[in-house]
Length: 466
Image 1 (cartoon, helix red, strand yellow):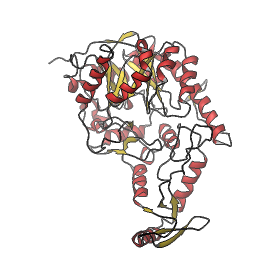
Image 2 (image 1 turned 90 degrees about the vertical axis):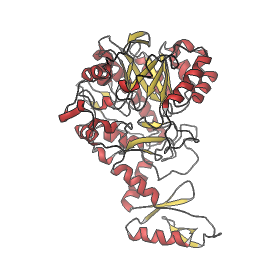
Image 3 (image 1 turned 120 degrees about the vertical axis):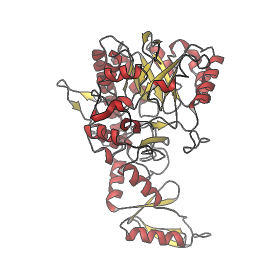
Image 4 (image 1 turned 90 degrees about the horizontal axis):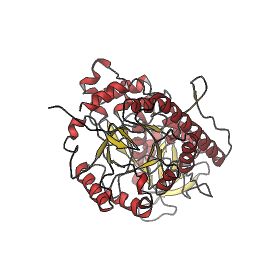
C-alpha cells in the first residue's frame, strides 16, 4: 500500500513533517541542518558548544586560558555563541531558502540563556525555531517570543508540559511551534525518566502521547503539533499515528538516522561502528554528571564506569554497628570505618591494582587505578562549567560556583569526552550517545554493502515510509 505523509506548517512555513533531531556536542552542525532543510524538512543544529569555523573552513577547537572555573566558563559561553552563530549561517546558506532551520539547546547546559540570546541576536532571521529540553525551561517562551522565533519544549510527560504551560507558556501561545515528546526509554542522549519510572520497564509511547494531546486540548492547543521523538525509524511503522483524530497533528523527529549520512560530521570509525551494532548494545545508564539517565552504546568507556561503580563500599567516620574495621586512605591518611567484609573486598581490589580509594558525596569509597585517579582529578580541576551544575566537578553556575557537595568520582567530564568523540577520537573510548533503534543500521537493507546516503537520499527514503 502506498505511504503518504502530508506536509505541515511548522515555524511559519509549509514543510515536510520530519525533523532532524539536534545532537550536541558539534554533531548536528550547519551542514547537516542545512541539507535537511534544503530537502524540505526541518533541520536542527546543536547550539551546545557548537564549533566555530575559521575563514578557511577549519574547526577552531577551544583552548581555555582562564585560571579559574568562572574565567573558563566565560570563555565557554563566548565560544558557544560564536559557534552557534556560525553554524546558523552555514545552515542558512546550505538550505537556500528551503525548509526550516531550528537550533537545539539544553536548558541545563552552562550559560544556556546567554547562548540562546546571543545566537538569536547574531543570526537574526536565520533561525526559525528553538527546541529545548533537559530541565524545565520556563524562560524559553519569553526569550523565543522576544526574537519572534517559535519554541519547541522537549518533555517526556503530559505533567511536565502542564507545569510549563501554566507557569509560563500560556502567556506566549502564538510562538509555541510544537511540543516534542521525547520517549525516555527510546531516545538517544539524556532522557527524562522521572523518579517513579523504571529504566528497565519501558512504557508504550502511544498512551503517554495521547495524554499529552488531551492535556494540550484542554488549553486550546488542538492544532499545535506534537513531535514524536525517540525510536522513530520507518514512518510506515507509525501509520496508526498519522491522521489520527485522537492524536491530532503529529510530526516525527529522527535523531539517530541522520548520523549515518555523507553530510554527517562524525568520524568514519563512528559511522562504521553504527552499522555493527546489535540489539541490546545501547544502554540506559545513570553515570552522567547531569543527574539524568542517558542512552549510549555500551563500549569500553561505559564498561569502565560500570566496573568503577562495582568497586564501591560504604564507610562511617566513627566505628558503629557493623562498621568496625579501620581503613585509611588519601594523602592525609584519613581513617574511616568499614565492615570486615568490605575491608576484605578492598584488599582484593587493591591487590588487583585498584590502589586509589576516592571518596564520594554519599559516604562511600570507590577504588581505581593510580592512573585513573590522576585523570579524574585532572578533569575535575580543568572544569569549564559546561553544565548549570555538575556532579562530577561540583561546579554550579551560582555566586559560589559550587553545588555545595563533594565532587563525585563515579561520574566523568562530559564536555571532554563529547568533544573528543565529535572530533575524530576512537568511538569505543568515549561516550557514544545513540537512540535505542541504532542497531537497525545493520538490519536495514538501505545501508547494505556499506551504503551511506546523502541527506536528500535519506529524506526521500523516510518520506516513502521506509
